[in-house]
Length: 547
Image (cartoon, rainbow, N blue to C red; front, side, top):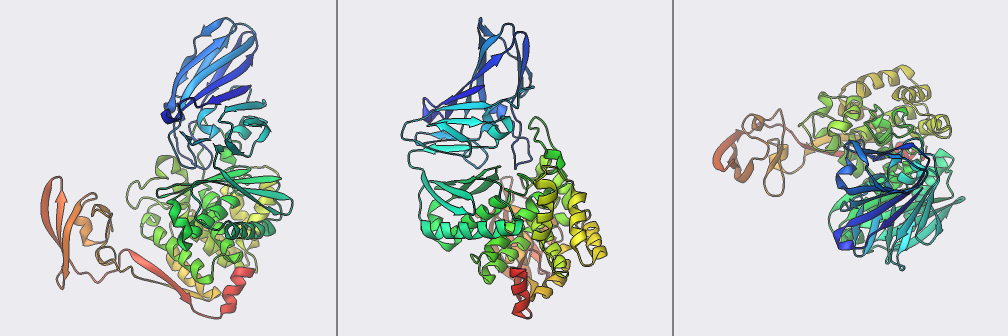
């Protein structure tokens, strides 16, 4: 089969797509468009962007019946070539979407290509009608210019591409693998420094896992002129969308770029190959519920940051700031009191990627990373580490392509722990249930010479009164234990306020009316900042970095 993709009017952001298909006589063809994509366990309904699907065969046009919101079928009365024509509105510029404009074409095949019943193992050719001066970045084999070949459907939809005349391309090598760094956008950083950092964290990751079964790997990076942060993992590539581009001439911007790149590279093993049974293989037609968000994203978040420390990119001080920020983001919500990380993982399909109901859930990313930090510190008691556990996971479930369940990961970690009953109880209390993780971390950190305290974040509305607003004064979050919880509502707008020895005095706009509200001083700490400091021998933290 063959896809031909064209963009005759780039300003329209329309992809014109033709699928040529050889059909047998009296064959029933079912076309299933994905409803979600790898790395995002959320229904996306890509069919909403398709328009004008038509089928023609040897005897002319024939009807295609729509069976559901994203499934079509037709009947080939005679043997021969059939053509499915349709358009896709490509106007989503993030790491999981597709985008067309006069200067570039960027496509995630998962958005636009059909899974065809009983034919998902066929080779797929893709012909891209692009301007001749466009460079093409993609992990798929390029048979000739602007022509791609996928061995099967799963490989196709796991291999996005971007194309533009001004793509920048650099490479570095680690062992037998060539790593390609493709950049679309304004480059404000020093390429030499970037490649040095990339190579260093790549080497450290490969050393600990022990294997990187790929000849080539591609970082497809969009540097955007507006604020943005997103990355998606794939078998032999990752797409990263970041902005604003001018930020990357600063250390803050480079830390963001290095952080997300290290995270996505670790996904090469974890998720892309060490994969939960529920998504082994992917079935993009329906939800695939999973309990393993802790491993998929918690482990990856922790490891991505840890390898920037281990490679020397992060100083100790910068790494501790990263952990402090994880604590702030995880513990600012009381979701941990209401839902375990296992249940939050299962509910990704409901509200995992949006704010949702206040204090309902925990993040598989931030809370997950802190759970992994706690496990790592416990494993250190027996001179083991989380990367040792993940190497076992790689050997048992990655190399073998055998899917795992959460209980399998739990057993691996417990088997490496010096105190197996302690680790077993940790999973029971903090993974499967809703234990107070901050208190546990506070007890664990001194073993690597660190201590942590909660303190005011120097924003009195937040820390002293439990009120968080956006830059326009719109109230976005209220601490449920604060007096404000009984008087204020989300989306109230704070027009002005003052603080005196009696408390907080607010002028609040709600539904077109202004009201005065006063709240007492409580001498409480609601939304806190977290500070990690040295509390012992530096050799203890050095062991954490090097073991």
